[in-house]
Amino acid sequence: MGKTWQKQLPMCRWLDPKGWHLTLHFLGHLDKTYLQEVIEGMNQVADQTPPITLRPTGWGVFPDFRHPRVFWLGWGGNDLQALERLHHGLLKLPAEKMASHKSYRPHLTLGKIRKPAPIPKESWQALPLPQSPWPITRIELYQSTLTPQGAVYQIRHATPLNGTPTP
Image (cartoon, one colour):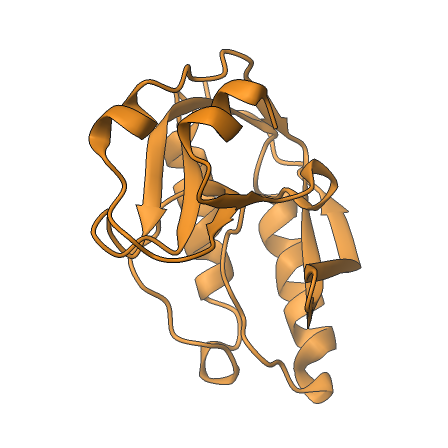
């Protein structure tokens, strides 16, 4: 992380950029008997979705700024509707076998808050937003394993976004 981020938010444990990902849907524990069904559904959704480009839109935390646990970067841009369609397409997978979902907020988790305490607005509002767009050309199914050092992610399946862009 940049020194600005570390200086402005010293209460964060910054995540390794190699583990950064945009979550489309959290599946929770998925029984192996449904894995192939989820993979087939992912492939179908990806075949109907063109590549997407997002732009950073702002900072946020979960659950809220009075009791923050997770610091994140939000995403939007012209392709936000395409991303939301991709998210909703994945929700049509075997939903009864997946964790329930809350309202969808595209975000990139950047850090975990060591000791939840209110974050002053001036700390996070002063952070400069990255200006680079983020192209999304495929979707991946991750398995996460929690360790004392943080989550370790393993790609279980990846499929390219192959749909035709809408004019």
